[in-house]
Length: 489
Image 1 (cartoon, rainbow, N blue to C red):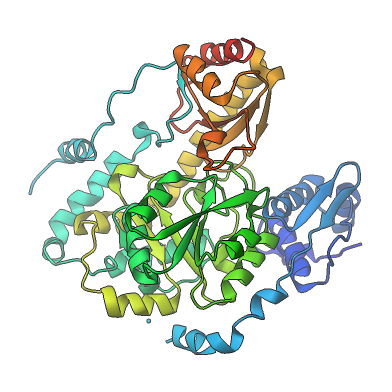
Image 2 (image 1 turned 120 degrees about the vertical axis):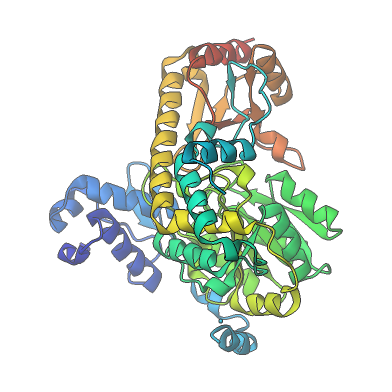
């Protein structure tokens, strides 16, 4: 039986230490593919830990794709080929790898109201019993008082800096703050000079096309977030829609379409909610390593809101060939209207960006950059994330409980509910997705179908996307009853 010295866990939780030990043995080959792992109870007794510790460690490994399970048989090691990732282009990229190693007097209440108004109020929504399409964050949870206090202090103490132009990549202080946050939260070791700030990911996508080249063929997930493909097409570049299976984009389709740059959301795909397992991640890195023109854009848009276990590690963490461009936003953690987004470029691309695009001005105001840096540095951001995660977990649990107690319960199947701010609900009905959504809206329930996000015919009939971040529970029972009536009609 496997043996690990649990006493070496130090500051780690026991389950996370056990998870890391097993993960290390899988990646090193000590635990070969398809080997059966010990049953949870005997393993717990052997290690001198609780069964829940082993369960949590296995759950995290399962979520990331390091192991798989077979009903009534147990847990087994997944086949993960890490070797071929490093075989391609080693001689061709040695030079790049070497190069990449080189670097007013407002009161606080008045100011809070001023900033609250400057963010703006969303247009008055149509009165629905429930709106499962709305994926905006909870506007009542924005930390206005803390934010206003920070901004007032900045205006009083940083007047000279406020009047100076912001560097092209954003203020170095903010980039250092984000680098520190990424190190602590995502275990990513990045140099602040690799971080480029921008007012929204839309703007950053445009910069990427200019940086990587208009001659490249760009790929997006199918199904996927349609806005990305629209931006690429407006930039007049080739945009391929890459089909997906249960593990993510299909590698053969990348080859067939001659795609150079693929945009993916491996930690929580939108809209299907799937997590790309580690085996497919290594396959993608191997694909990228075959050509100096190939890159992976990793969109980590809501990694902060995994509801069970630890966040799924970023692909950037296992990228040894500098092929992953990491992109993220504060839209889900703070507010979409503030437009705080950033990308982490591989060091060779960061150097190229500095040489060719440093004439650009940063599109986020200096005042807001300073406020965000302070919000991160004084620990307010981490506290806010923890508070929001608890709020959204409670909101999700309330919704799942209401579904389980409703008439709809025996007609539905829930999946992908443990990550991000939406899940998938399969509903048994004879209606087409289009007709179902139409009739639901007539009854006061706004809902969207997974099939709407495919460019080709969808294999996902009768699966619906349930966003709950802005959901009110006041009329939830009536809404679920309305969906039941539509389903059986």
